[in-house]
Length: 571
Image 1 (cartoon, rainbow, N blue to C red):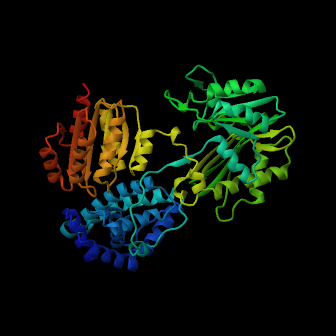
Image 2: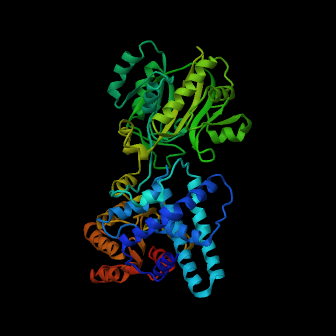
Image 3: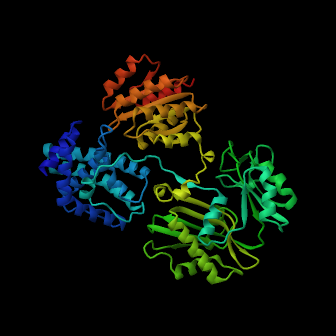
């Protein structure tokens, strides 16, 4: 406990040079001896929603020390990859996302501050006051555990294994869930034995006649579907005036309608006014449907596993179905360890209220869809409509599939299907540079380190009457090149009228950001006002670099001042 107190005193004094090897040795000793068992009991209680009361405030303080420092000791240089691994493998041992990790970092950092305060208060003002501060640290730690508990955890690394882990390189920051086109999803589902309509995809008008002759020699009516990664195609409008992205047409009209779709921009309620390009068209057989239903498999936090959602009504959005027919929607949680059972499949089929399809065959189709979900590392399989045909088959008439990007290393064939033409070019560039970027509709471009600070920056811009143009988090380990790429992304947005850089240097050093800003100004043509607020590690060096660069920028003292100046710069 004395070691922990000295460590806490060093933290609250703001000592930036705690020797990492000594720190890791201390953590290893504490974790293996006392904290790991406490941590296990704590998370077990959090997962089962029971109240966990620490039997000893000393153990609580040790627990928060471990949690906080593991979240805080990211590398001070690119060579410190061991320390980065130490600080992240603990969180990434759960089946979660890097965004989740970043949330834990924010919460745990605050917990560390309360912990340090409590340790010093115990030393200075006595146990009672220190215990109150420690209780606040415990509450912050409990928030971490509750986030963990809601994130579908199946296992954890013991703390001592995380600390003693081998060296590893930097970890990818950007989180995405792969979305594929309908024709790609149909092909994948058919490989798992799921019934899908017969179809063929074309990317040019000259291919259509060949496809019709080869694939649909006897079909008098066909369905022509534009392929974009957005919903609401049927009610969408092309910018060339064509109404609807899905048409049922006579055979002799297929080439005409498909030709009007290819190479055009389709605008739907999900694409926004800019729309999305239609580079491919899916030509399908027209099915004689006698019943349309809704079916989906998603990940459920409450049951910590997959859940099948089904409704005997379909063909429209699940939101509308939930509003109109809430009693018809059933949810069947699946035990991730046992897999889907006959009883599970039967419950789903009964909920679909089939009219003519064979029950046993339908149960098999449900199992095939679950098999696809698990083996392809899906985060969502949505079939709408799941339809019964006149010949008694259950068919996935239309489907949406999303995949977990964490599984890209073992689903390389699926991830090769990614269509970047359907994604925001800025977000694609950000992902390539390991930056977290989300484009918005405002006029003030933001470059911030840390997700929490980025959201706070956007909020305070709004408070002062402005509107943020983006969410851009450079993270805690950004290099000068990443800062340059961030500026390229910001300046490529024609809506951006001012750029606000808000850096609170802890792990991220202010001088690195400053050097990146100076080099970015040499690389890109900066034609809008630049407002910079730097605080934290190496802030004086960072400010000196900016001053010596002779750049035309607006310096800000704090976040409020920065936001106010950014909004004023728009005038």
